[in-house]
Image (tube, rainbow, N blue to C red; front, side, top):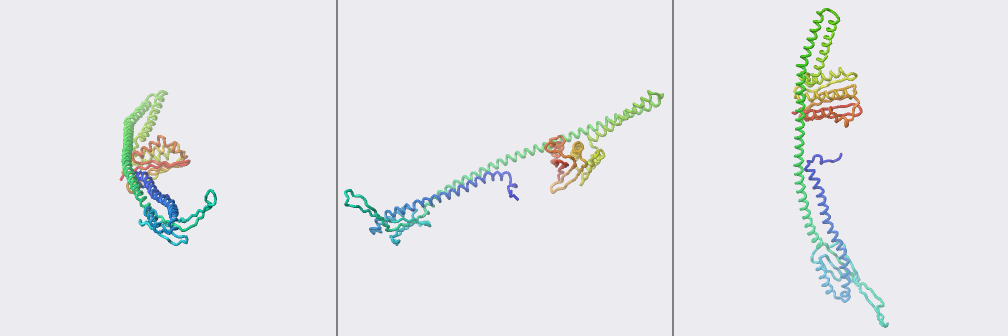
Length: 427
């Protein structure tokens, strides 16, 4: 399992991490380099100076050792050792490697584990004096002793340590400035981001309120139209039926003939047309304003709708299942849920070519709030969500759900489609 601790971090913490982690890495890298570079430089300098000091002392000690002037040699070596803080100790040996003298530094530094040696050599040059032009004829080199030099890096490291602490102070101040700047920028960005998120939430809430208001206005207009149809059109159609029936009754009192028979037949046709128009008006009223929703509630209304589709659908069976109490739902939410199911079943009948459709209505109780869950599942041919998600029906259902803070999810493929609507009900 991948470790992702930053998933629970706030935006400010993530921004601080993005800025501070690289800065801290650069700070650590600089500190390590600032400490290791002087150490390497000191070692290299000692490695160069040690053999050089040993060679110089060996060359300058040849006469004193040959002449036996060890006191003068010791004083000379002491001046050299005390003037150079990098020399810890100088030792001179004769050709049998017996100690002749030893001079140690007064600084008391720590000696290096290695030392440098150089031979003290005496060179004898002999010449042939019998020739007209004297010149060297040969040279004899004799080793008369050894010089051993032990170096110390304490004084040089002390000087480099002071420089290192100064560089560390400057780098720490730079890191502190970077941290303060990152904190300030993260704070400002977080404030701006929270303000933007708040504005988006307000805009989203305003959009939901607007959608609810529009849906309420549409439902009110549908209700007004339904009342007009019910009160005016249906009443007029009833009057037409009564007048037509009166014409039929009067035609029967006339002398029977072709004309009287035609009058009765045509009046009877008007009665049938008025009856058909009346039934159409009643169906239109039910679509505009589902009276069954007011009488039976959401569960009964959806059950009646499913039963109607089951009776009308040739070759397709519709089933309904409900769990929970839906008697105290908000009327606006109930109408939105009813319209959503109505649109979904209409899409199934038009496009799915399904043989089984199941509608489930459930009230789920959670730890914080409860929700109304609606599921419409069919075994039809399915569709491509990317192509159908922009359809007016899908958009309308999604907007109805989002207007109440809910959601709409569609699971489909090559076979079958399941639409799940979740509408929060509050506490």
